[in-house]
Image 1: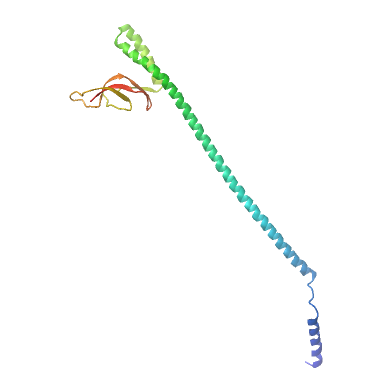
Image 2: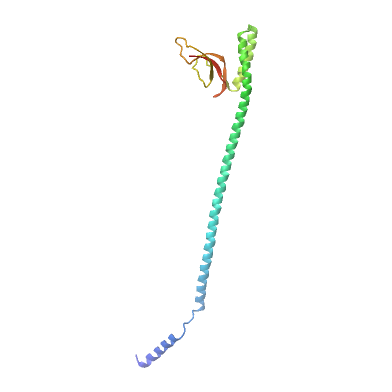
Length: 197
């Protein structure tokens, strides 16, 4: 290359170095600003999203707590209802038991009367005694009359004892002085008995 051609190129190069940098075109500036705005919007949306997630988690925890309290309240009320129902039923049965205790002596007296009356009177007393026993049966009450059975303190009260005869085991009921009564497993009146010893 000739000297003459080199000079204009070098001059253009020096001139370019001396000139200040050119500013970016306005489209490029707008794109940079738009990108920053998008980042700011993204950060704002991310912050809102995180806040909503926290609120949701808090609401779910409160919901679980309220559900737990509600379920406990329902269970407590159900237990309360069952206890009340059982208490009412037991109070009713206890009240009936108290009244029955007062009529048991009537049956005892009717059975004693059968032992010392004439034949005509005996028929009448037997009819009354059958009615008495029917009432007890309808109420689910059973007699405790353990003659010749092994003594059971859960149902009997030993008020006398006698030595066992030959061939008879000790601890058996020899005689019943007063019949007992029970409803299911609950004893309303213990049988008063004589036991072999």
